[in-house]
Length: 288
Image (cartoon, rainbow, N blue to C red; front, side, top):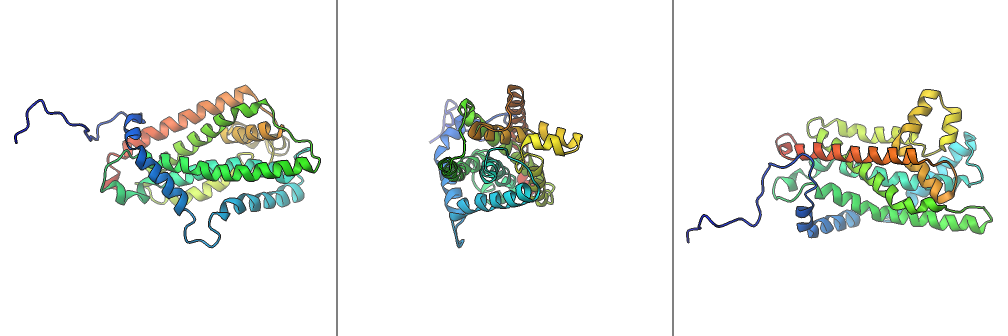
């Protein structure tokens, strides 16, 4: 049966798209696939491991203990009236979500080349699914933090949140935007420069030490050289870690200028990463 000129396609797949486009309508159309990838990321991350999901609990606890021994006991870094272990656990909980989003999305094109080359779906679904699935891990580690939070309160420590706790969802969004934006940028670059992916783990480790994770910002300003202290202070991740501790433990500092600055940087990094991602997805299969 011959088709008439008035026939129209329900969907049209084209490589022509705007540089900055989340294409939310198409993502919503593929929402079942998004949820499938989220489920896959959650169930397979520790499959065929000895301890399985227990790593969600053990990793932040071990890291907090090490930070407490090295930085607080040996390095004599003061956390004020807040127990050092709880102070470190707060920073690590927030940091882990950012790094999980960054490292998980930084190899999107290479690790999914076989899928991308065989079937069409909005490519941005893949990094989005990683960011969403990591919320589960973040929630588990946040629960651990809350349990120790109440434990120290029961021990007589004066700990309480403040009204900045209302900004908690915004801090999560900023961490997700930074991790997703940087991850998409790195993923696009590694399609041509494969050795860059090797440096991600090393760079993330260095980034942690200039993001005020194992120490308060006040200690950085006191003990670090002026130019390094300035780098730490203007690092948006430092503002997020400090803000997270401030609203949960009521310690450290908070400024609306720093908060606004971090929000703007997070949006910029995400938009830049999405533009690079959209440009790369058109031709990456030829270089991977």
